[in-house]
Each structure stands twice: as structure tokens, then as C-alpha cells.
Amino acid sequence: MRIAVNTRLLLKGKLEGIGWFSFETLRRITQNHPEHQFIFIFDRPYSEDFIFSKNIIPVVIGPPARHPILFYLWFEYQIPRVLKKYKADLFLSPDGYLSLKTKVPQLAVIHDINFVHRPKDFPWIIEKYYNRFFPEFARKATRIATVSNYSKEDIIRSFNVERDKIDVVFDGVNESFQPLPSEKQNRIRQEYTGGAPYFLFVGALNPRKNVTGLLKAFEAFKKEKGGTEKLLIVGGQMHKTGEIFETWKNMHFKNDVVFTGRVSTSALHSIFGSALALTFVPFFEGFGIPIAEAMSAGIPVICSNTTSMPEVGGNAALYVDPFDIKQITDAMLNISGDPLLRKELIAKGFEQKKKFSWDKTARLLWESIERTLH
Picture (cartoon, rainbow, N blue to C red):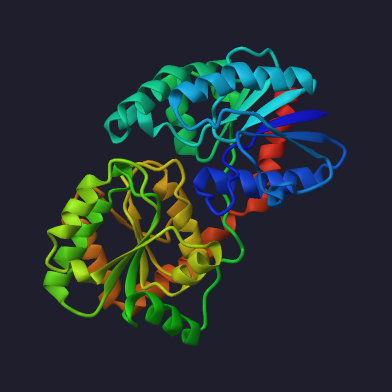
């Protein structure tokens, strides 16, 4: 078979949620299936790090698709040309975007449809594109894969898609997220917070991630407890970050908040393993990879009780209503003041995280590819 793949989010040093999904699954699938040929379609010069095996043909076609007008040109004109030129049997799109102008069978990985429920979180033109085209992509797709049962039900309800057309392909967690020895934890804390214990948030900075609510909760935590704890916020700015930084500037304890920006993969592993707890309280998630990563790293998890997150956290997380600042604050107080609770959550987390691995994700995605073709 010739399987064409949208690999525009494989960007060296800039992998985020969907980029990591693409990297981890495609690396395994291409290496595990040398009998098939894969056409990796990039929208800019690519890194050789992403050419995982000899059965991959890399193709670069412009323009770089990072704006709705360019999305349209790339997927509706450039992609059909490549599919025709390489006689593709299937088009796999790990970010869910499809071409409406090809008859080649297509498998869309739609991670979530938060734009349906939270349109104001996006720049106007992006939101209009998503809500105009993703319902059409869902109907056009031969099959759909998504990363949680929550997202599956949401796509069925919102886009009126047949249930048996959608496969659940859970996200995985990298095996390099492991507990760290205390000497290394001390070294990492010294590097990022001057030696202080820290609550950790990991994710792109945008309104959906509720960083503003987390900052307010941390401010209330410090006012009530005092103490040396800090809040470490790891992730690059995405869009509509004004409220986040305005809230931070007005905090009495703003010097106890550390923004690292984007960090390297190896640094992220160490940052997770040295944290007091993950505080991950978005309003909406299709999966919530940081939850599984925290469990693998051996730290307790505070997370939202909404959307897919209870599905990922199981019985191994302390759940809060992301709209309730006091609940988030109380959870932080409980975690920081109760060593037995931390120990219990960590033990449960080690069991829960066994449900998620990239090997399993790649296998499930391959099964979805086979269903799309047959």
C-alpha cells in the first residue's frame, strides 16, 4: 500500500500535543510495516530526524499552512495533486484536516472539537475556519480516529457522525517520564525555583488551559499557607494570552511564579519528576497528556473534573471544578500538607498510567488504517 500522511506538524524542536502524537505513532508504524510505502507530506523543509525508515518518501509542498487561507490552498489544491502523483491508497491526517477535493480514502485523527464549545478562545478567522470545515471533514472522512471516549461521543453529537465510523486511539506516554532520585530533584529545583518545591503546569498558554484560574488559586494558596512553594508554568504562548499576564502582574506573590516558556524534551522529563504536583486545570481537553506524564514521573495530579480528564486520571487524581478557584486552592493545600495523600495518589498513578503507551496507540491507529482501507 501507499499511505500518504500529513506531517506538517513534525517540526524539529517545536513538537506539541498533536506533533508528539504524529511523531510517536508514525515512527512505530513505518518501522513496523516495511511492506508498505509512506509518503510524508511536509509544508516546509523537514528534519531528517522525522524520516524514520527507508520506506518513507518525503515530499515538501508549499505554501507553509499556518493560516486559514493557506490551510485551504494546501489541503484543497496541493494535497490532491500529491495523492494523485504518488497514487496513494489512503491519506492519513494526524491533525484532522482533510481534503474535500479527493476521492482517495481518508482517515482523520480529530483529537477534540473544543472550538465548537469555546469559540471565543480562538482568533476570529481560525474559529470560523474550524467550525466551517471540521464538520465537513468529519462527514468526508472514510474513518475517524480520536483520543478518548469523551471525544468520540462529542464528535458523534456535534457532527452527527455514525458511531461505528469512529475508533478510539488513546494517547500514549513516553517511557522516559520516570521518577527521579532525590539528588537530581534537588538539582532541578535549584535550577528553576532556587531550590523551592513547586506546583507544575505544562501546556500551551491559551484561554482553554485556564492558566488565569490557576494563578488566582495559587495566589489564594500563598495567602493562606505562606510557605516556600512556587508555581512553574511550562509552555509557549499560543493566542489570547493578555488576561494571563495581566492577572500575573497584579498578583501579590508574582515573584513565586516562574514562566519557563518552551523547554527541551529532556528538560521537561526532569521538571516533571521534580515537581510537588501537577496542577492541570483546563476547561476542556480531548485527552490531557500531562496527566499521564505526571503519573509516569511519580508525582501526584490535581486536574479538572471535566471533559476527558477523569477518563485519563481514573482514581489516581485529585479532581476540581476548573471554574471554582477555591476548589483548586483547597486541592493545592491538601497536596502540600498531606504526605500520605501524595503517596496514595502516586501509587494509584503508577497503576493508571499502565493503560497508556505509544506502542498501544500506534497499534490502535494501524488497526484504524486497516479498517479505512478494508
